[in-house]
Image 1: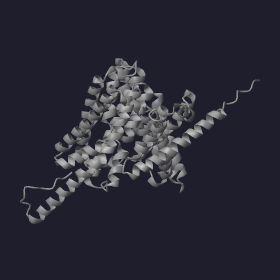
Image 2: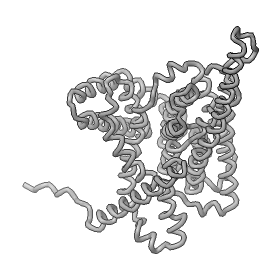
Image 3: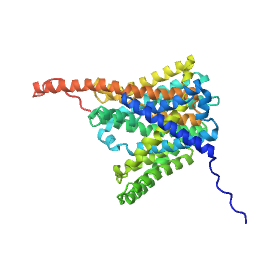
Image 4: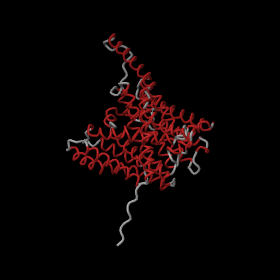
Length: 444
């Protein structure tokens, strides 16, 4: 009787390099992330910069020999680093879904829907149009132009709830009317954005034939229906059982297991794994059995370790030297302009349709314009699927960084004017107690 072959283990040198890579990237990401926060920038800017510094943009360009020793380019070595990053992003997306406040959408009602849809559909359409107009030389050789255009549209229409929430929190606007409306609209954007990303990713995997296109549209709908009918009761029971323990361990285990199983399920269907992670995170959020305090260890581990490593590996894929080429720089400027114009114009239009004033509309546009974490994840997905090449990947990540940096100063300016207007209207109301003045306070 022959015995089974032993399970192979990592080679000594391979494991050593992986540990050194993780240590280097984590150290740089945490250091630069803290530095970015000190300058009132999103931490993701510093975390991406960590990868940029040791990647082809800086170290690989100036000292290629040293870069090759620190980050060997052998596929198996990079795959190990990618595996850690993928685990990080799945749990990050799951935690993001767990923290979405769907009750905000109900409370803000049609106003949030108008702002969200206008702020999503306009950049989606403009992004698709820009995708068709970009030079074919920037696309990977075998990429279908229609698929690329659709993907760029999705990349430009998303918003980043974590960046929006952090900005509003830093400015003490999280519990204000305009802050709550911005978050509610962002929740709707997130849900639709992940759905669209899953559809386009399925198209990239299966092709653009009519039958496969139909399947790409129906599969995500089926996943959501299954999650609501079967997944929600199962998650509720599991969290209820885990919640009987006074320790956070069982709750953390159930949450992580739910996210990973959901990711595996959508990946098996040919959809993006992050779509399953987001859906399961949303199920946990809406289960009614979640104790947020017990999830704190999972959130801390993800945000303090796994997410910084993931964003540093995302920075490794950026090649800023490509911007020295006029066509790449022109494309970056054009895509950034389309992204900002589409989001601001869309959110502004939705706000005006809801009878908000100009400064409130501008504040909404500034908040919704933040792409941050979500767009980096979308860009990494496009790179992995072969829809984006190194140049277009760099362009999309630059949009994520620039729009996240734009949000705080514009939001501060707009909210200062909103406060000024509110105080003026309050003074007018005091002077006109019978309400005869034509100027009234705007309700959000």
